[in-house]
Image 1 (spheres, rainbow, N blue to C red):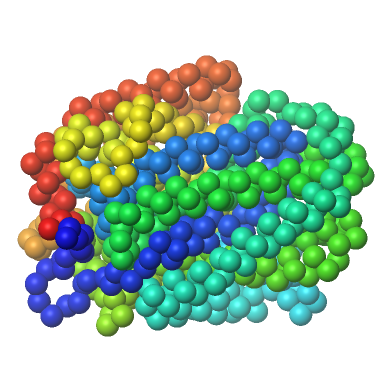
Image 2 (image 1 turned 45 degrees about the vertical axis):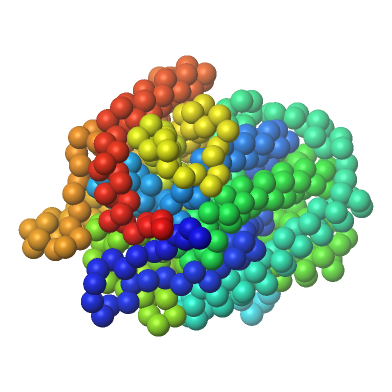
Length: 544
């Protein structure tokens, strides 16, 4: 029988193997639990403020975009069932420089989600008098709030230390509630307080196409839909990865997209007319700081508000838990590829990469520091974390070219069309995030190059056995891609500080042409087949 296993990174007494203890439901719920987090508590309100009732169009576009990316990941996840998969596909196809870059993007996004979810929990807890002293008026944490946040991060890490089997069981139990409560909210609001006239009472799209497109990246829509990749990050611990990874990846995305779209529809339909009388951008009602809980209270469903306040702990908590897991698996993957110290690939007796968890905890604590600009930076980085997804379509195209005969448990129909389209879509989402997001993201990228580059230099000069080879030729497109996206965003019309020199539609055409050029350039210069096979073997994927 054919099996897929994660090989040890190096011989010797250090334990570096993960345990394959997670089944289909565990993987599916890991991804669903990441998708249904604080996004459902805030996303509908934030989107309607930016786009008006046309927010349902924004959610639809965002869902289609992420589904396309999920389909590409599904094929790659079935082919390469390794921990931290999103960090490793570009490495296999384009070598060290590209792998290091997209690995940093992936880790940066995963490591900053858990602290943001903790702050969402604390923000909703402000409904109760005993928790109102946890936040300053500028929404930074007070001393007591900081203590609570650190304790919650410690809980996420402690549960992860129990091992992936217990983690999967804990997350699955929480995810049943995380799905049930939004569904209950949808059904009750649709049945008792739905006013179809709300969709046209104050214009369906009051802020035009720009509002619809801007809402996709800036209001939390993409942030809410992120998470399908958690099944892929746990692929090294899947009991039947070739069967289960594609199913969990695609299934979780379809479930999450359907729930979010329905939530947006019932939110708009249930609003009292007075809430948007001053325009959608001035949306206001009692309790709007906790949008769904406040809304159900306003319409007389106080009992449901209590349920939602309870879920404001469960949903963000479950997402924070699984992203803590993901960050440690991504750092594990970075180490296995030679971009981070070998310590990150060592596991304890339960098969847990313990040092990666410790790093996740420290990162979370840093994110809690009471500096508003830093808090905004974390949010901007996370909202643009779709950048890590852009590496998968590129790797997909290169691997279809170089390794056409390799076993693909799930083969994406029309993949040669969907892959370049999904890369274009990813770059449009990044562009719509706006210049004020991307210049901050650029600083974070530079920081990553300094950190990982310093380790690569150290490993190379000391001739460590797993020192990375950067493969500059295969990644020659990468600096053009990153700098080009920055320049187009700067000259475009989205976000504060952008120059507005690119009219709407012309900017979309430019992003499309630029993206396709990068896509086919990357495919043309990808590593040769023999070198890709060696990278796969070195990275720990064995089929036998």
